[in-house]
Image (tube, rainbow, N blue to C red; front, side, top):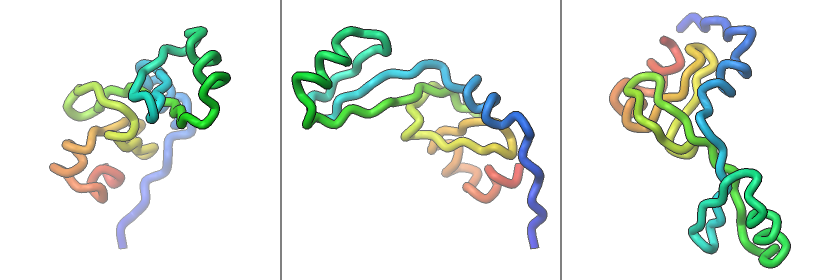
Length: 98
């Protein structure tokens, strides 16, 4: 049986520090919008059927590459995001057991 390491008490703060930027992405238009951009509200108002997603830009804690949150995973055990490439190299169980 594998021992489970306790999560850091401040894991949420650490995760938020690893997020470099937040952007919005319209899947229908294939368009990126910056937060605070007036185009976001206008886009939502004029095209309510479009699917807008909030996307986090993060840095991989292992290799240092910058990726979106959909191409990374966060481990509260080590307070880091790792990209899918690093996860594939080490394995998800090792990522959470580190």
